[in-house]
Amino acid sequence: MLHLSKRKSCSNNRSHFKGQVIEQIPLLSSTPYFRKGDLVSLVGKNGEKFVGTLTSESKEVFRPENGNPKSEEVKYQMEFVGD
Image 1 (cartoon, rainbow, N blue to C red):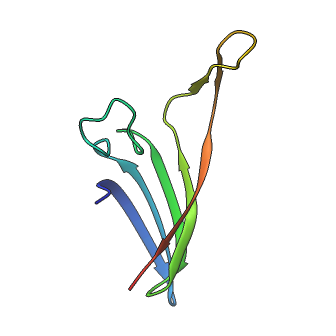
Image 2 (cartoon, helix red, strand yellow; image 1 turned 30 degrees about the horizontal axis):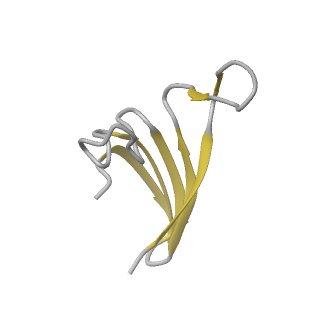
Image 3 (spheres, rainbow, N blue to C red; image 1 turned 180 degrees about the vertical axis):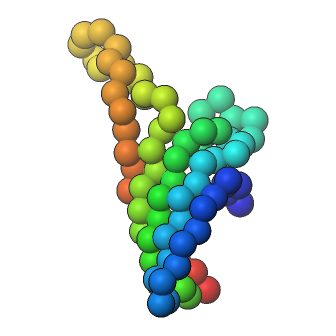
């Protein structure tokens, strides 16, 4: 389960969720999928799929095979399907 501090707004049957990850998942992992402070933004229709992004609160560090480590802002695409 993804724990978020969230804000929800709806109009007609379309909803928009924005939130911040409260605790990392998996909780004790040294390389979690979701980290505390990551930002989530999802838009969709109730009872259908929600699509959006996960943005890291801090820059990710990439270590290329050749060269120095590089810090970059990263945004991941997400999709959730409801029941």
